[in-house]
Image (cartoon, rainbow, N blue to C red; front, side, top):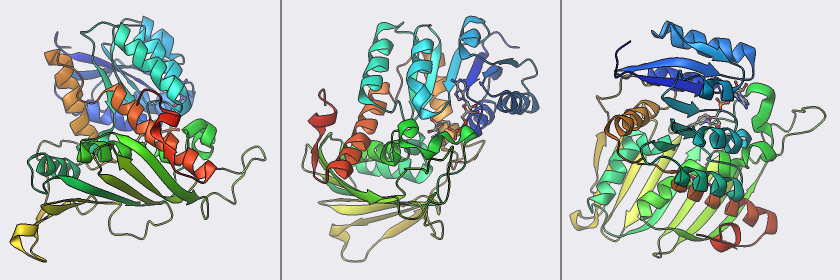
Length: 365
Ligand SMILES: NC(=O)c1ccc[n+]([C@@H]2O[C@H](COP(=O)([O-])OP(=O)(O)OC[C@H]3O[C@@H](n4cnc5c(N)ncnc54)[C@H](O)[C@@H]3O)[C@@H](O)[C@H]2O)c1
């Protein structure tokens, strides 16, 4: 092992944990020295994935706290179910280890605030990174760069459509219940609320939602309990600079060309990112009606495409760069908390049947 090699430990080696192992091991100067999972079968799968990609020394732990005490790791990736993030991350933040935590940060604002406060107490030299990798989808990144360079002028509207397949099966079926996930608008849609904040360069003030569980998982039962997670809905978000966002979510729409279609319109033009096709369309009003430039977006830095179009790899490139250079995280726990807060406001709007001010769910907004 090289002296400057960064040693990673992965906590939670289910579907996404293995994805992280594969991405970490496509970077230069990295190794996975430990995995922790409460499930012995998943732990073995995670360890084998690491061994197959050139980390023969990987040690398995049933309890993540033993991994943290082992001295075997420099950086930790938390990839456990949503409802466990608060406690697992709190344990990691009590050390000086670098950490990336998967979205959603936590399932409640109180838990988000608890870990944000804990992160602020720790060593300024450790990197605490929020995993919100949809920022790193190549067409989405290209779209955000165009917006920042002024292509569409002042952003007024952000419409994000996610039409996709139903939630996959997870270890012990944790994702079938809102109490574990935080609710679909938190679990799945925190990515999109994060993108709305970036595209508008503003913070939300009010959220209106309509949605239901109309099609998926209604014939399933776990210990006699039928899943309660919504599978479709619309969410409107008003931002503090007057811009507005719309999320259009459908999770029984796998018969679609694109999983995400994002449209951002400003006073000078419109930009669209089509994520599955990896296409960017740009039109400026000054060029006239129906005049559009369209280009396919690729990123030659991607060494592992994985399950998310290379976004996980690019996210890990930046996390590693921050660790090596000592620079602050580009995606913070506060970003994570704010994206969760919009999702929680959307669920409150559904429950109460009325618009919800962000101050109702997030007093520090
Ligand atoms: N960024 C993305 O697009 C994306 C995609 C999928 C999942 N995720 C997130 O990744 C996380 C994991 O999701 P998944 O799809 O891999 O689920 P999963 O069920 O496949 O895996 C979760 C793993 O965590 C283990 N686990 C549970 N409690 C644990 C604990 N206390 N300590 C150690 N291990 C524990 C389980 O045994 C399981 O192996 C979730 O937070 C999810 O929201 C993010």
